[in-house]
Length: 545
Ligand code: PEP
Ligand code: MG
Image 1 (cartoon, helix red, strand yellow):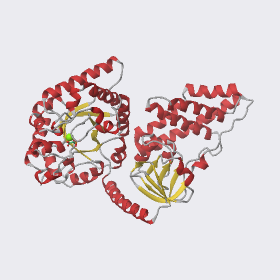
Image 2: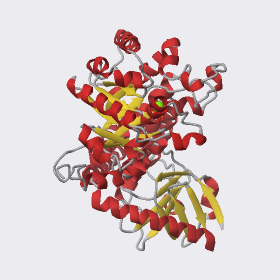
Image 3: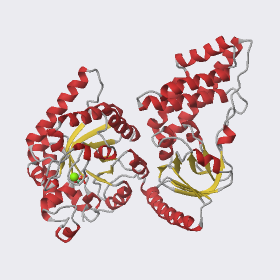
Image 4: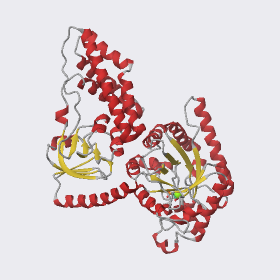
């Protein structure tokens, strides 16, 4: 048995025979001399016409299967085919070097993709793969097997060096158990498409995989962990079977509930969103049909590195989440460092009671340069989707006033710099302290929404350190005081025309769902794997009884 590890882009298990494509796909482009330049130009134009026709068919298929936002990439490809610089480069090479069109296209593709790959902006870097994709298509359109797609007669696991977005959309889902690629990033269009199409996939397993895999090899793919096993042993197969059974049961639930409303038997609706800690959780969010992201714990961007993430790094991450969620609401919480989340480079110093110390919004207000960097990244990303921003650990009106002032300053700076941001960003606060709940009447008119962080609200209300396992018997998560604070916050939010959600662990406690619905809670945000269970619960509640 050989094991390779890459990035799982869609959480599912597949076991089957490998269909290896990479040797079959790559035909070397030859450089041949030509005499008739005009004839070569005409070949390029004919290929372009064919390629555009193919792309518009792929676009239609993508539109049906993966939705408008994901299909847009093929519109971009059509536009790239018409790009002046790209076309001029091909013509120039043909004309000046008197070479065949295939060679001119291939050289242009290499030049343009190296240029894109060297850019700082991750969006532009991603265009490197696109320019290669359209160029391969153009070249293929000049050959006889122009309609060639990656396919397999028997259900199998596609193994390839890489897959282009168009190859991914054209995969026949009935015949593809999974795909594994040696290269690729988990945020590429290919990965996003695999997730949306529910194809188990692991990408970036490394070049060594290619020299070890052969057509017909038995292979097991774990899209949850990113592990790929060639010739798996009995124990691994049993583990896979077990995971597969679990996943199948979940899929059944998904089949029954996917696309269904979160609505009680008597017609009350609630939004069910998902909590994430980073871009890598997006696959699970989409797979579990969450209606949006109710809490993106942005501090994980700060916990991962050895220094502050730059504005650009943050922007890329936020943008990725917004783009992947394709217009569904994404609520990003500003950094919540401190207490149990320690980061050396913040230099916070020792505290006797860190949970009651300099954490979350208190750090942002004492070190506004850190806060402003994050806000700039958030505002800039806001044009890519439907963004909500929320602030953790609020205890007073004056804190919120300061936050809103800083937000206005950042917006002014962006405006002065001619940098775009959305005018529809929702602003909210977390209700995590008894103080915030008790003055929620004053806080609500200042924001668009509340999100109750029950993990902290319970700890601060019941004076129970959430990190201390010895306090479990004292920590009644259903305590009347906690529920009253949530109810009061809901009442005050609604009075001011704001909405209210719950994003702490209590949101997933199905024994409280009915109580939350009765309080008028508008949204529950839970870990992705809990979304469907919660939907099931909501759909079985009858508030009349
Ligand atoms: C909470 O306190 O309930 C919450 C969602 O925030 P965190 O668990 O990240 O502190
Ligand atoms: Mg909290």
